[in-house]
Image 1 (cartoon, rainbow, N blue to C red):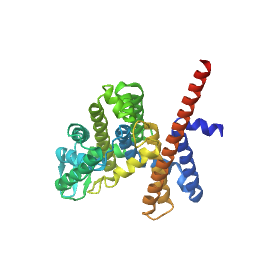
Image 2: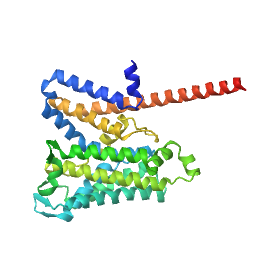
Image 3: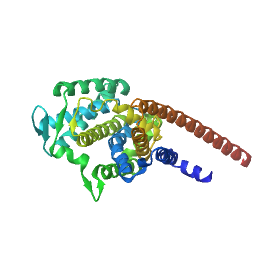
Image 4: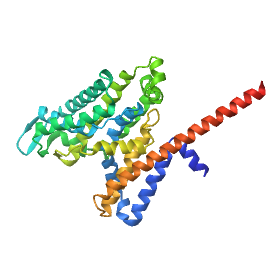
Length: 337
Protein backbone atom coordinates (compact mmCIF):
# COMPACT_ATOMS: atom_id res chain seq x y z
CA UNK A 1 0.00 0.00 0.00
CA UNK A 2 3.07 2.29 -0.01
CA UNK A 3 2.35 3.37 -3.57
CA UNK A 4 -1.20 4.36 -2.59
CA UNK A 5 0.03 6.53 0.30
CA UNK A 6 2.44 8.26 -2.05
CA UNK A 7 -0.40 8.99 -4.43
CA UNK A 8 -2.39 10.62 -1.65
CA UNK A 9 0.42 13.04 -0.83
CA UNK A 10 -0.79 15.20 -3.70
CA UNK A 11 -4.30 15.61 -2.24
CA UNK A 12 -7.06 13.81 -4.12
CA UNK A 13 -5.14 13.71 -7.41
CA UNK A 14 -3.67 10.23 -6.98
CA UNK A 15 -6.99 8.79 -5.83
CA UNK A 16 -8.74 10.38 -8.81
CA UNK A 17 -6.24 8.92 -11.25
CA UNK A 18 -6.95 5.48 -9.80
CA UNK A 19 -10.70 6.03 -10.13
CA UNK A 20 -10.36 7.26 -13.72
CA UNK A 21 -8.37 4.14 -14.62
CA UNK A 22 -11.00 1.94 -12.94
CA UNK A 23 -13.82 3.72 -14.81
CA UNK A 24 -12.01 3.33 -18.12
CA UNK A 25 -11.31 -0.35 -17.43
CA UNK A 26 -14.86 -1.03 -16.26
CA UNK A 27 -16.60 0.48 -19.25
CA UNK A 28 -13.96 -1.04 -21.52
CA UNK A 29 -14.83 -4.51 -20.27
CA UNK A 30 -18.52 -3.89 -20.87
CA UNK A 31 -18.04 -2.31 -24.31
CA UNK A 32 -14.54 -2.66 -25.84
CA UNK A 33 -15.29 0.18 -28.28
CA UNK A 34 -15.12 2.52 -25.30
CA UNK A 35 -11.32 2.22 -25.19
CA UNK A 36 -10.70 3.00 -28.85
CA UNK A 37 -8.44 5.95 -29.59
CA UNK A 38 -11.22 7.98 -31.16
CA UNK A 39 -13.51 7.57 -28.16
CA UNK A 40 -10.76 8.41 -25.65
CA UNK A 41 -10.13 11.53 -27.70
CA UNK A 42 -13.86 12.30 -27.51
CA UNK A 43 -13.70 12.03 -23.71
CA UNK A 44 -10.91 14.60 -23.56
CA UNK A 45 -12.82 16.98 -25.84
CA UNK A 46 -16.04 16.38 -23.92
CA UNK A 47 -14.32 17.31 -20.66
CA UNK A 48 -12.89 20.63 -21.88
CA UNK A 49 -15.84 23.02 -21.24
CA UNK A 50 -16.30 21.79 -17.67
CA UNK A 51 -12.53 21.72 -17.11
CA UNK A 52 -12.08 25.32 -18.31
CA UNK A 53 -14.97 26.55 -16.14
CA UNK A 54 -13.64 24.50 -13.20
CA UNK A 55 -10.44 26.60 -13.21
CA UNK A 56 -12.40 29.73 -12.34
CA UNK A 57 -14.67 27.89 -9.92
CA UNK A 58 -11.61 26.52 -8.09
CA UNK A 59 -10.43 30.07 -7.44
CA UNK A 60 -13.88 31.07 -6.16
CA UNK A 61 -14.30 28.08 -3.84
CA UNK A 62 -10.76 28.49 -2.49
CA UNK A 63 -12.06 31.78 -1.05
CA UNK A 64 -14.92 29.87 0.64
CA UNK A 65 -17.33 31.50 -1.84
CA UNK A 66 -19.54 29.94 -4.52
CA UNK A 67 -20.72 30.98 -7.99
CA UNK A 68 -24.03 29.45 -9.00
CA UNK A 69 -24.33 31.82 -11.96
CA UNK A 70 -21.48 30.37 -14.01
CA UNK A 71 -23.87 28.65 -16.46
CA UNK A 72 -25.91 31.82 -16.99
CA UNK A 73 -22.69 33.83 -17.35
CA UNK A 74 -21.66 31.39 -20.06
CA UNK A 75 -24.95 31.82 -21.88
CA UNK A 76 -25.22 35.61 -21.66
CA UNK A 77 -21.56 36.14 -22.63
CA UNK A 78 -21.97 34.16 -25.84
CA UNK A 79 -25.35 35.77 -26.61
CA UNK A 80 -23.97 39.31 -26.23
CA UNK A 81 -20.84 38.47 -28.22
CA UNK A 82 -22.73 36.88 -31.12
CA UNK A 83 -25.24 39.73 -31.29
CA UNK A 84 -22.51 42.39 -31.40
CA UNK A 85 -20.24 40.63 -33.91
CA UNK A 86 -22.47 38.71 -36.30
CA UNK A 87 -24.51 39.04 -39.42
CA UNK A 88 -27.57 36.98 -38.60
CA UNK A 89 -30.75 35.62 -40.06
CA UNK A 90 -33.70 33.95 -38.43
CA UNK A 91 -31.94 30.58 -38.30
CA UNK A 92 -28.23 31.24 -38.81
CA UNK A 93 -25.68 33.52 -37.11
CA UNK A 94 -22.16 34.08 -38.40
CA UNK A 95 -20.07 35.99 -35.87
CA UNK A 96 -16.75 37.53 -36.83
CA UNK A 97 -13.49 36.65 -35.10
CA UNK A 98 -14.25 39.46 -32.64
CA UNK A 99 -16.74 37.12 -30.96
CA UNK A 100 -13.88 35.74 -28.85
CA UNK A 101 -12.62 38.94 -27.18
CA UNK A 102 -16.14 40.33 -26.82
CA UNK A 103 -17.36 37.17 -25.07
CA UNK A 104 -14.32 37.14 -22.76
CA UNK A 105 -14.76 40.81 -21.82
CA UNK A 106 -18.47 40.25 -21.21
CA UNK A 107 -17.71 37.29 -18.96
CA UNK A 108 -15.14 39.38 -17.07
CA UNK A 109 -17.70 42.15 -16.53
CA UNK A 110 -20.41 39.76 -15.34
CA UNK A 111 -18.02 38.05 -12.94
CA UNK A 112 -16.83 41.42 -11.64
CA UNK A 113 -20.43 42.51 -11.05
CA UNK A 114 -20.87 39.47 -8.82
CA UNK A 115 -17.68 40.33 -6.93
CA UNK A 116 -18.78 43.94 -6.48
CA UNK A 117 -22.20 43.00 -5.13
CA UNK A 118 -20.63 40.56 -2.67
CA UNK A 119 -17.82 42.83 -1.47
CA UNK A 120 -19.29 46.32 -1.68
CA UNK A 121 -22.83 45.54 -0.55
CA UNK A 122 -21.64 42.72 1.74
CA UNK A 123 -24.18 40.23 0.42
CA UNK A 124 -23.53 36.50 0.75
CA UNK A 125 -21.97 34.94 -2.37
CA UNK A 126 -24.62 32.21 -2.48
CA UNK A 127 -27.43 34.80 -2.58
CA UNK A 128 -25.71 37.04 -5.10
CA UNK A 129 -24.81 34.22 -7.50
CA UNK A 130 -28.29 32.69 -7.20
CA UNK A 131 -29.84 36.03 -8.13
CA UNK A 132 -27.33 36.49 -10.93
CA UNK A 133 -28.16 33.03 -12.23
CA UNK A 134 -31.75 34.05 -12.92
CA UNK A 135 -30.94 37.63 -13.94
CA UNK A 136 -28.27 36.74 -16.52
CA UNK A 137 -30.34 33.88 -17.86
CA UNK A 138 -33.41 36.11 -18.18
CA UNK A 139 -31.47 38.81 -20.03
CA UNK A 140 -30.05 36.22 -22.42
CA UNK A 141 -33.47 34.71 -23.10
CA UNK A 142 -34.96 38.17 -23.68
CA UNK A 143 -32.23 39.05 -26.18
CA UNK A 144 -32.61 35.81 -28.14
CA UNK A 145 -36.35 35.29 -27.75
CA UNK A 146 -35.49 31.95 -26.15
CA UNK A 147 -34.83 30.57 -29.62
CA UNK A 148 -32.21 28.26 -31.12
CA UNK A 149 -29.91 29.43 -33.90
CA UNK A 150 -27.34 27.61 -36.00
CA UNK A 151 -23.81 29.03 -35.97
CA UNK A 152 -21.12 29.23 -38.61
CA UNK A 153 -17.88 31.06 -39.21
CA UNK A 154 -15.02 31.66 -36.76
CA UNK A 155 -17.07 30.75 -33.67
CA UNK A 156 -17.01 27.09 -34.72
CA UNK A 157 -13.21 27.03 -35.04
CA UNK A 158 -12.40 26.71 -31.33
CA UNK A 159 -14.62 23.68 -30.88
CA UNK A 160 -13.43 21.77 -33.96
CA UNK A 161 -9.91 22.86 -34.92
CA UNK A 162 -6.90 20.56 -34.57
CA UNK A 163 -3.18 21.23 -34.24
CA UNK A 164 -0.80 18.36 -34.89
CA UNK A 165 -3.66 15.87 -34.70
CA UNK A 166 -4.81 17.12 -31.27
CA UNK A 167 -7.91 19.21 -30.72
CA UNK A 168 -7.05 22.84 -29.98
CA UNK A 169 -9.48 22.93 -27.04
CA UNK A 170 -7.53 20.14 -25.33
CA UNK A 171 -4.25 22.04 -25.77
CA UNK A 172 -5.94 25.23 -24.57
CA UNK A 173 -7.28 23.50 -21.46
CA UNK A 174 -3.86 22.06 -20.60
CA UNK A 175 -2.15 25.43 -21.08
CA UNK A 176 -4.81 27.28 -19.07
CA UNK A 177 -4.63 24.80 -16.19
CA UNK A 178 -0.82 25.06 -16.03
CA UNK A 179 -0.98 28.87 -15.95
CA UNK A 180 -3.75 28.86 -13.33
CA UNK A 181 -1.87 26.38 -11.13
CA UNK A 182 1.36 28.36 -11.47
CA UNK A 183 -0.45 31.56 -10.47
CA UNK A 184 -1.76 29.93 -7.30
CA UNK A 185 1.62 28.50 -6.38
CA UNK A 186 4.08 31.23 -7.33
CA UNK A 187 2.20 34.55 -7.27
CA UNK A 188 1.37 36.41 -4.07
CA UNK A 189 -2.19 37.07 -5.26
CA UNK A 190 -2.60 33.34 -5.81
CA UNK A 191 -1.35 32.40 -2.36
CA UNK A 192 -3.65 35.11 -1.02
CA UNK A 193 -6.66 32.99 -2.03
CA UNK A 194 -5.46 30.11 0.15
CA UNK A 195 -4.70 32.38 3.09
CA UNK A 196 -8.08 34.13 3.02
CA UNK A 197 -10.05 30.96 2.41
CA UNK A 198 -8.32 29.12 5.24
CA UNK A 199 -9.01 31.78 7.87
CA UNK A 200 -10.92 34.89 6.69
CA UNK A 201 -10.84 36.56 10.12
CA UNK A 202 -7.09 36.21 10.59
CA UNK A 203 -6.54 37.32 6.99
CA UNK A 204 -8.58 40.46 7.61
CA UNK A 205 -6.68 41.22 10.82
CA UNK A 206 -3.44 40.79 8.87
CA UNK A 207 -4.58 43.36 6.33
CA UNK A 208 -5.15 40.94 3.45
CA UNK A 209 -7.73 42.25 0.98
CA UNK A 210 -10.60 39.83 0.46
CA UNK A 211 -12.45 42.19 -1.96
CA UNK A 212 -9.40 42.29 -4.24
CA UNK A 213 -9.13 38.51 -4.11
CA UNK A 214 -12.83 38.23 -4.94
CA UNK A 215 -12.45 40.37 -8.04
CA UNK A 216 -9.60 38.12 -9.19
CA UNK A 217 -11.56 34.93 -8.51
CA UNK A 218 -14.97 35.95 -9.82
CA UNK A 219 -13.46 37.83 -12.77
CA UNK A 220 -11.55 34.71 -13.77
CA UNK A 221 -14.68 32.59 -13.26
CA UNK A 222 -16.55 34.87 -15.67
CA UNK A 223 -13.79 34.66 -18.27
CA UNK A 224 -13.62 30.86 -17.97
CA UNK A 225 -17.41 30.62 -18.28
CA UNK A 226 -17.31 32.66 -21.50
CA UNK A 227 -14.55 30.48 -22.98
CA UNK A 228 -16.48 27.34 -22.00
CA UNK A 229 -19.55 28.77 -23.74
CA UNK A 230 -17.57 29.48 -26.92
CA UNK A 231 -16.28 25.89 -26.86
CA UNK A 232 -19.77 24.47 -26.39
CA UNK A 233 -21.27 26.52 -29.21
CA UNK A 234 -18.33 25.70 -31.46
CA UNK A 235 -18.69 21.98 -30.81
CA UNK A 236 -22.49 21.84 -31.16
CA UNK A 237 -22.85 24.34 -34.00
CA UNK A 238 -25.89 25.88 -32.30
CA UNK A 239 -26.66 28.64 -29.82
CA UNK A 240 -29.47 27.15 -27.78
CA UNK A 241 -31.54 28.64 -24.97
CA UNK A 242 -30.56 25.70 -22.77
CA UNK A 243 -26.84 26.56 -22.99
CA UNK A 244 -25.48 26.60 -19.45
CA UNK A 245 -28.50 24.90 -17.91
CA UNK A 246 -27.38 22.83 -14.88
CA UNK A 247 -23.81 23.66 -15.86
CA UNK A 248 -22.95 25.13 -12.45
CA UNK A 249 -23.78 21.87 -10.66
CA UNK A 250 -21.53 19.89 -12.99
CA UNK A 251 -18.64 22.34 -12.58
CA UNK A 252 -18.98 22.47 -8.79
CA UNK A 253 -19.09 18.67 -8.72
CA UNK A 254 -15.85 18.48 -10.73
CA UNK A 255 -14.13 20.95 -8.40
CA UNK A 256 -15.29 19.25 -5.19
CA UNK A 257 -14.50 15.78 -6.54
CA UNK A 258 -11.06 17.16 -7.35
CA UNK A 259 -10.46 17.83 -3.66
CA UNK A 260 -11.28 21.53 -3.28
CA UNK A 261 -12.95 22.13 0.07
CA UNK A 262 -16.28 23.95 0.04
CA UNK A 263 -15.07 25.63 3.25
CA UNK A 264 -12.19 27.25 1.35
CA UNK A 265 -8.43 27.27 1.67
CA UNK A 266 -7.74 23.82 0.23
CA UNK A 267 -7.68 22.56 -3.35
CA UNK A 268 -5.72 22.41 -6.59
CA UNK A 269 -6.35 23.14 -10.25
CA UNK A 270 -4.96 19.71 -11.15
CA UNK A 271 -7.56 18.05 -8.93
CA UNK A 272 -10.36 20.02 -10.62
CA UNK A 273 -9.07 19.00 -14.06
CA UNK A 274 -9.07 15.35 -13.02
CA UNK A 275 -12.56 15.76 -11.55
CA UNK A 276 -13.83 17.09 -14.88
CA UNK A 277 -12.13 14.23 -16.71
CA UNK A 278 -13.70 11.66 -14.36
CA UNK A 279 -17.20 13.06 -14.93
CA UNK A 280 -16.66 13.10 -18.70
CA UNK A 281 -15.41 9.50 -18.65
CA UNK A 282 -18.49 8.38 -16.71
CA UNK A 283 -20.92 10.29 -18.92
CA UNK A 284 -19.30 8.98 -22.09
CA UNK A 285 -19.32 5.43 -20.75
CA UNK A 286 -23.01 5.60 -19.87
CA UNK A 287 -23.72 6.84 -23.40
CA UNK A 288 -21.67 4.05 -24.93
CA UNK A 289 -23.59 1.35 -23.01
CA UNK A 290 -26.90 3.08 -23.87
CA UNK A 291 -27.86 3.76 -20.24
CA UNK A 292 -30.87 5.93 -19.44
CA UNK A 293 -30.22 9.66 -19.76
CA UNK A 294 -31.38 10.08 -16.16
CA UNK A 295 -28.79 7.67 -14.78
CA UNK A 296 -25.99 10.21 -15.21
CA UNK A 297 -27.70 12.70 -12.87
CA UNK A 298 -27.97 9.97 -10.25
CA UNK A 299 -24.32 8.99 -10.67
CA UNK A 300 -23.17 12.61 -10.57
CA UNK A 301 -25.10 13.18 -7.34
CA UNK A 302 -23.62 10.07 -5.74
CA UNK A 303 -20.10 11.06 -6.83
CA UNK A 304 -20.56 14.55 -5.35
CA UNK A 305 -21.80 13.27 -1.98
CA UNK A 306 -19.00 10.66 -1.86
CA UNK A 307 -16.41 13.36 -2.61
CA UNK A 308 -17.75 15.62 0.15
CA UNK A 309 -17.72 12.76 2.65
CA UNK A 310 -14.20 11.78 1.61
CA UNK A 311 -13.04 15.38 1.92
CA UNK A 312 -14.61 15.75 5.36
CA UNK A 313 -12.99 12.50 6.54
CA UNK A 314 -9.59 13.59 5.18
CA UNK A 315 -9.90 16.98 6.89
CA UNK A 316 -10.76 15.37 10.23
CA UNK A 317 -7.82 13.00 9.86
CA UNK A 318 -5.59 15.97 9.12
CA UNK A 319 -6.81 17.79 12.24
CA UNK A 320 -6.17 14.68 14.36
CA UNK A 321 -2.69 14.28 12.93
CA UNK A 322 -1.89 17.95 13.54
CA UNK A 323 -3.23 17.76 17.09
CA UNK A 324 -1.20 14.60 17.75
CA UNK A 325 1.95 16.19 16.39
CA UNK A 326 1.37 19.31 18.51
CA UNK A 327 0.83 17.18 21.64
CA UNK A 328 3.99 15.13 20.93
CA UNK A 329 6.03 18.31 20.37
CA UNK A 330 4.77 19.81 23.62
CA UNK A 331 5.59 16.65 25.56
CA UNK A 332 9.08 16.56 24.07
CA UNK A 333 9.72 20.19 24.99
CA UNK A 334 8.50 19.63 28.55
CA UNK A 335 10.78 16.60 28.97
CA UNK A 336 13.68 18.57 27.60
CA UNK A 337 13.01 21.36 30.05
